[in-house]
Image (cartoon, rainbow, N blue to C red; front, side):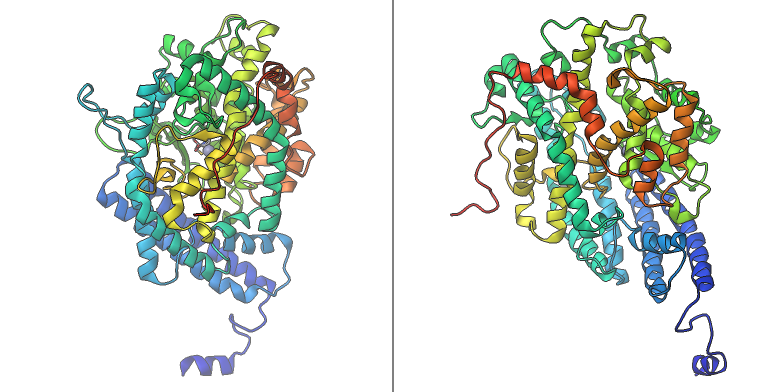
Length: 605
Ligand code: X8Z
Ligand code: ZN
């Protein structure tokens, strides 16, 4: 009654049929203030949970996440009344981003939503507390950070197989929860107007989901020849080293022999595949170890790079609040991550650093996130993100491409830069990480998109996973797998629900960014020898892109830095051009590629 009489007296109320731009602005300002509060609370709770995994912290993190998701979903509903309103581009973009802001859309039914957020927290906790206990000869159980080091340094195929199998057991108990997670999140996505959660993720690239898939395929075709050459070369060298343990009739490589639990980056087996007559280069792991470089100093190396470009030092709170090493007394999620707790200056890192070349790179990667956070923190809340998620992942890697011998000499880590004849060995070592990663970066979300769309059913989760790993990477599981296993669960980003296409994009973008920054620094030699360390011009250019946050469609940000407005693998190919020629020579006598067993999902009886 009251409402009716109110409407009768005041027909042009705040809920009038034809809203104005001013109303839309006011709605958005209020929504952003609320979302900032809720997101920050959820971040804080997640931080505590991941630093201290217990049933209680898991429950608290789930509740806070649920509150933030619930309110976001409501706001998307309330925003519908502005749908037909013509508004300034910036404001329209905020409305669009609001609708796309959830990585884990959830049902509006409170019971189902709470079930989903609890499952999400429990999956993350299962991964974080996962361990492999080798048994009688060793009393200590190994977390994934310890296993990373063992997989990197292990050279006994039997031992590697044990570590691989041991860790992959972490997945099986997640399977049912994951299937339910998919169902519930899809329901949330549908309620928001998307066909499923994967389609919603693909809608966040300023183009249609179909255009986005096609763009990924275009990029993959650009770089695939390079991957095939690398695969062919590495396979031969592994067979020379391990004999029968590395040789398979189908031409695939056993996934446990590549120096990494997921065979996603192969730099750790450089010693096995190094060119026979390579001049001695340097071993960064050994250099850092000999200098007793601790976690804090590792991070300081990264910070120093950013300040050399003209960025500020990290805030004191960064050092007080970050977690840089695995604590002895409790379970934590060790997978490296960067945090933006209050969406302002309270940026942090959480990682379990070991003194290795891998972790040296990871530090730069993670600091790229934190410097991005700091650069866009003054923007309206919904613009406090990267141009697209691939940009976020590419910044620190772009910096790390500048870790050249000349740079290491400059900062005193090596005395003498290796001779020019070391270029191929150095490029090979880099390609083992960067090029080997490409098919992996692509297939993770191919699997997830098939899972979310229902094309792959829970009964086929593992089969579909291995079908993609075989097809794209040409790697095979070291032991038979079945649907009693759930190997996707052994890769952090699946239980954590972090979209993965971003890392594929980042591998391409980082060479575009790097080439552009090298040009700004006035560099004109072979691309792979450039370091833009200490270039204030490069720093200013980078900053101008970071400060845009998510306020413009990503091609605008790309153009600001590179002058290009498309993803393009040409700079990556330019970087590795000398290596490609060398690999082709090495592979002259070799048969490239591998054969895939009949499509296991469509196998005829
Ligand atoms: O997850 C990460 C970062 C945190 S955003 C450590 N990366 C991917 C992975 O480890 O699988 C960086 C490279 C790919
Ligand atoms: Zn990252």
